[in-house]
Length: 113
Image (tube, rainbow, N blue to C red):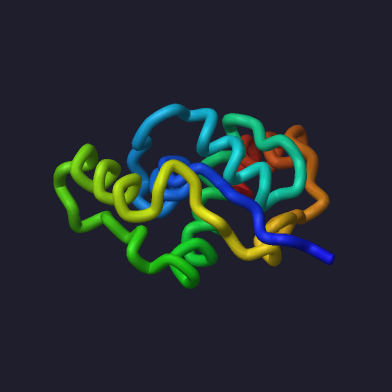
């Protein structure tokens, strides 16, 4: 039986907003949870684009793209949700596509991703 997991609010917000809100490690943590394996730097844009609508479906309040002050958006999210947010168990591995980091890099170089 899967249980919900807690993920860093700043990482989730960074992915939904498109601006890095704090420690980049939080973004790696969130995306690795979605992909089911460690995510490499060159994979962040791809998996970030894919994760964004999934996150916003469950947490539409994290759409802060209209807020010009990223620090205010970050501070609001942490005050509202806390340092970590409990996320649906169904998120774990939902973006697993069987592609290795090298395969994803080849796709980027070939213009396929």
